[in-house]
Length: 161
Image: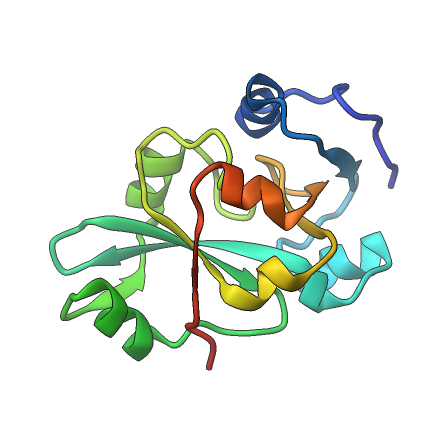
């Protein structure tokens, strides 16, 4: 396991952040990697709450959404249905999530995605000093500030169970 220096690893997420001049730090875990927030929190030595999950969702019309959530919390789909004005919302299939984001499961980042998905984040994420979010592949985390999310148009919501 190792920590990588900024700008040494290139993914669509880091390239996007570089183009937008948004600061970040890269942390890479190598070897046997579990794609969970708990695993990354343990590797990074931070609370699971500080590791943010990027969840791709689909409604009944196969419209996509991305929701950013603390690693130790779950999304309330009933709240999301009301918020988005849809009848049904579920985690997107691998095929749709990959088509929309260009990322593999366990490596999804809100940065540098292929489609123009609306991106929402749990409101309390914006109260943190810094957070860790996927950098575009499994085992790669980016340390950023909540301001980075605001810069790319992420909208605060309340959708935690």
